[in-house]
Amino acid sequence: MIKTYPEMNEKIVGILRLGGQVEQYAAQYIEELQAENAALKESLDKAVEFPCKVGDNVFCIVGIDPAVEEFEVEEILIKRLDPIFAVFRLRGIDIGVKTSCVLSQFGKRWFTELEAAEIRLAELKGEKG
Image (cartoon, rainbow, N blue to C red; front, side, top):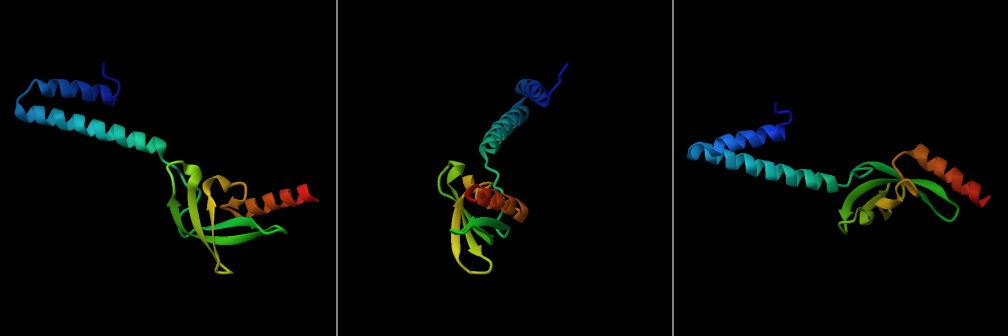
């Protein structure tokens, strides 16, 4: 009994290879699609899911006397293949300045939710006090 689609595809390809030119072309096409599908799955396995997207508001703990500031994500640049080096260009909503952060700083200094940033800020102030 055939239990999975890959097993079924292999059987179908085998049967089509026994046929004429049209059937052999169909078998070749199935194999090309299987190779393309495998390449896409491999790319997906290496994909990085960003914590935010362009246009989102994010929150950063900034300053010597730390405070939470809100920024809008203006663009996301991949500097290297390693996701640690993903750089976000941000525009300050109130102050109009630009800053950047690396992906590894999300959850430490940068946050997608104000509440999470405020909790971390309280922790940091507690460590200093």
